[in-house]
View: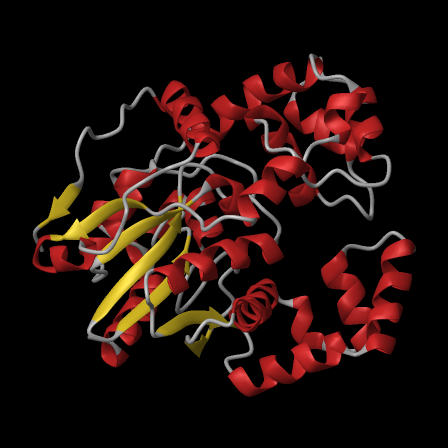
Length: 351
């Protein structure tokens, strides 16, 4: 039985995701989605709780949904990819299916070879030292336009992780068509567009998704976040994952009295992007330190099952259903923000 893995957030699931799942089902007997939990790579709460989003994935055609632990789900592209590929390898996935703006595995592999060149690496570091973000530094150092697109960056990290873990996983990529972030998209809409523009949901997602979206969850989080930062010392902040070269001092000195947006604007620089800062803020709230990440990466990641299709329960036979303390903290925080309690037993879904 061939198993295809999809690494995802489904925040929320949209018609483009459905096409990806359908393609995975055309090349494999079963599809497992390795999905972020209640918080995402943006450092913010997901628009629907993880059990609802896992259910959406099953309705869209997936057979099994397991959780990407929070330490990886809210990390930079490198660690996000590492954690997800490690789980895919642990589950025995034969192939990985993902979307990219490039749509060409060979081009992506060639890009990795270019980045791995010693001279290129030196140029990348020189650009980083000038204060630009790592993805932009890579693009400037290599002259590769390919790396200016976020899904290409993730795709490259997936391929690097497959190589570094020595996983026997064959990658397949579908080219992302249309501009997902257009205000009025024609073919597909991005998850971001669907979160912010309710009028797009009828066309680009599904009723079973729309009814579970909590449009106020991020606002609730942003109201409480500055309070957590206000009581942190500079020394504590310096130990947090993602903090580099004085960022802890910028966070410590930022005004927390005027709300989340004002705090972000005071911290942000060319080097420290909004997304990086959002991740660091969440890491501080959840206690994700550099030491925690190092320790987690030395072990096999946990595999928490979120949902399974009733006809595919045999996929559970070799899975040890478990979770970790950081993810439990994230779940308690999300429950407080949403007012929703988690299911007390595994969700098996008939479709």
